[in-house]
Structure formats: structure tokens, C-alpha cells
Length: 204
Image (tube, rainbow, N blue to C red; front, side, top):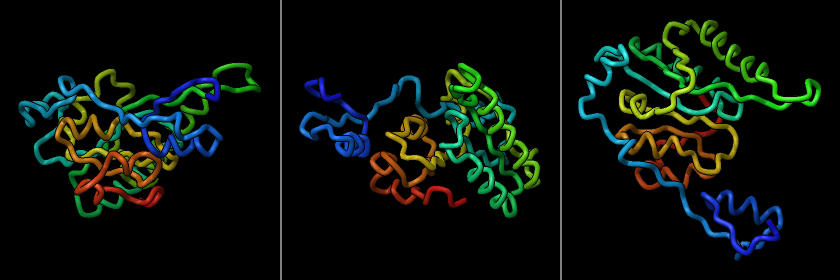
């Protein structure tokens, strides 16, 4: 980084991290991510979109789209849904994404087992909390727009300092409100009236 003339980063949080590493702040410009509003936009027919997903009008859908990784704090999201289920019998959690493939020195290459182990622990947690029938793992979605469109709310429960949190603006562009952790660059996205939807990381 010291060899470049100028850098672009996606948040002031990331800029500060680079400054903390020793890069002069004068070299860094912050340009927040954008999103494709032709792709991410409100559903033309909310109920018809839900019907495509097999979701009834009565169900309250909470969604997450992103990688399945411990940094994302998905166990806290599952615990939160378990708390909500006490008062909201029609709540449903839909999780889109694939487990992260980690590199293992011991195994001499990429190791998917660690990521799959985390997903299995989440599935077991849902069972232990009695909400396995309310939690659906969708796998990877090449286009999560219809998931946002069919949701009542989407959540980004990260416990690490997200540089930005692109799923937030994708969801908002689809007209779906977002609850997200108050970490990293997320507070730079959820500003003004949306700041009320920031929560403490790791607090279901």
C-alpha cells in the first residue's frame, strides 16, 4: 500500500484501519459502495413474489444473505428469532449463503469442513431452541433480490467490523428495512432515521 499514490476504500472505518497500519490518510479517498437499482428494486407484486417462494401472507419473514461464517454472528440471529417466536407464531427465518472455505495448513489446502461445521452448529442450535421448522438454509443465491423483496425485514448480525455491508443497501433498494450490528462501516450506511435499527453486536 505504501507504493501506491492513492487508495480508494469503501468506508471511513476501513480508511481508519489503514491509517492505523501506517498508511497516510492523505492518500486515501472514501467512496461508499453503490448497488444496481435495476436489479435491486421493490417487488411489483409483493404477494405474488411470496407465492413464488411458497410463503403465505400471514408469515413474517426475517432474512439474511451473505456468507455462512462465524464473523457474521448468525447464532445471535437464530437466538433472536427464537425469542420472537414466543410472541410471533408465524415468524420464519431464511438464510441465504454458503459456508466459507478456509485454508488449512495441516491439510495443505482449502478445507470446507470448518465452514460446514459452523452451518451444522447453526442447524443444531435451531433444533435445540425448538425452531428448526422455522429456519431455512437456502444455500447460495446468485440473485438474492427476490429474497429481499419477499422479506419483512433483513438482518446483518455481524460481530466483526464489516468494511461496508453491501447486503444492507441491496435490501433497502428492494424496499425492505434492515436491522444490523453497530460495527465497522455499517453505521455509515444506516444513518438518519435508519440508525434506530442499529443494535449491539452479539446481543440477540
